[in-house]
Length: 192
Image (cartoon, rainbow, N blue to C red):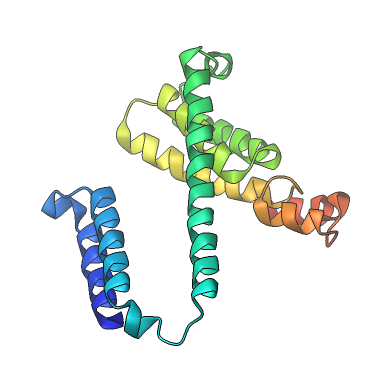
């Protein structure tokens, strides 16, 4: 059954990679691949899970489903807030102040905003907010992709030097393994 799951995964991954030539939506392919792998696991549970403690399996499964649900609920909440801000023209506060027509200057402005937003927000929230902002500022799809990539890089770098800007640094800070001043002093310059 393990081999069947691996084969299903590889085939699914192939169709995700070949989304454009086959004109198949990769999200649908990913969901279908996941369902097939789960079905194969359930069908072969007697051989795959033989000798394992069912309570331990339940705990591990609940942990993984909980992590996935946590990410989905976070994304739904963050995207709802971004859409509400957009519906009430909240992004105009920022877009009206950006008066440059140069794409290079705009790229620097967006990068710097992303870098410092991420120090206060987390990387994912910053990326979602800045993606919505970029869609307001840019018209061409290729420019949106380039600026989006830069936003993700800037958001990841910006979250690294702040004790509250990244999940990892938050956990280290809460655990007392780092101090706020120490991480800012030692990681700000490499993050830039």
